[in-house]
Image (cartoon, rainbow, N blue to C red; front, side, top):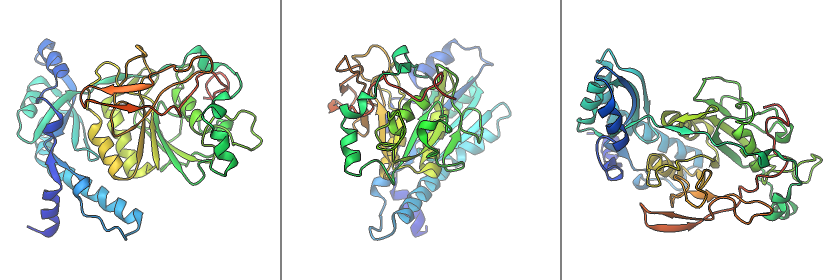
Length: 376
């Protein structure tokens, strides 16, 4: 066995510690009620996974070189973990839409129930889940108002600008419904395709967002970096107006499938490569869902800071995952008249710890770059 193969074996660990069983409870319920000839879209997570935390790193090598080495190991580990499973899926005539992922080794596919059960019984598969559909966040009426941009002073972003700190040189990533790249609030700071844009929903090379009132991504990117700080733009609603940004579209106006989110998270790691990645979405149904834990852990190991909304949906007093994971920066909501709009303290029962929420992604009542006010 080569030294490279030995090292790969050392950095591979079992994923089963994250999962309680082979079939997720929701998929098990779907299968029990489905006719035998039904095809279901599912995602199989492999047992073998790469652990970047124990990968030897040359601390004197350039950051880009180390980054590429880590990507190569993730891809090599996933290839080894998925090899026999992909061969099996390829031999089944009724299997469709096969898509392997390497950021955290998984394979998405659509297949009849008998094939899914066969995959679930394999010893190289840790868990099979349904390709869950996550509803898209909605903008409220207050999101579309045009009150003064009080959020900037509330988090003292303008004080940072006065000291020359505006996000200049930082690349911000966002996974959402898309973005209106031509909105004047962004001043052409979106990095062009192919590095700056990925569409897992429609496959388009042209940046776009959903129509009003569903242009959530443009709304969120406006909070992040809309305006020009101390420049001449009239409506500075973004805390980091000096930052450039990359965007991956994982949702349409209704929401997005888990496979779309997996694809976008992987694209961010491989192509987008932001310094910080914003995700204003999550799961408010199950607060113990660990679906994206593996991807987030590997993004952290690559040096990408992950920010997640911790309570976008009712009931507002409950946290949501992945925003309540202890390995992310949690973002809550804030209004001028109301101290806390969303959750301000998150508890994760599955991990039994608390974390304070960063209120940087604030205020829903201000002049936002959203549909109805400009192109979207």
